[in-house]
Amino acid sequence: FIGGRNGKSPDFLFNICSQVGASLEILKTGSRGKGHQNLIELLNKNEPVIVYGDIHFLPYFATDGHFGGHAFVVYGIEGENVFISDRGKYPVKISLSSLQDARASKFPPFSPKHTILKITFHKPQKDLREGIKKAIRSCCLAMLYPPLKSFGLSGIAKWANLITDWPKIFPGISLFDCLMVLCVSRTKSSG
Image (cartoon, rainbow, N blue to C red):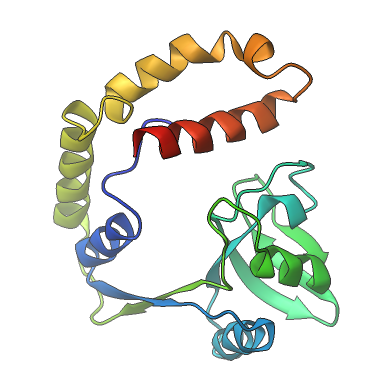
């Protein structure tokens, strides 16, 4: 996020899928019930589901900040427990109500709107090497020649200079919350 992605969202997601012979469908709804139904339908097909949620409602983040553009994988629901794979080393178990609150959040930025990324593989890939090489090459070019100076390698350098002043800029805010605020405010101001 700090250095920018290889394209705007959701374009970079479609690009990733095209590199591995898959297609992407983005399911969104304003209905909590329909959002839950979409999730259950995919889980009942034994498919892990990529969802968006507001980190404020995900208890393992322990933050007061809001960011609804966070993607993670739900791979099971058992009663009132939800099983999640996120960026941590180990899977996480949270309550169903926490998941529903995270997916239903209306707080800015990036209200999740019960979004699900449904990936369909059309043909088995025998050899992903070429697709992976092409994707790495594309990412490298985007990092070297970003559309804005706040993205890519120049964006990382800019952030490296800004981050040392975080306690002065955001007194009383935890480092994690400060990084989230910087990320969102700089993205908005440069986009």
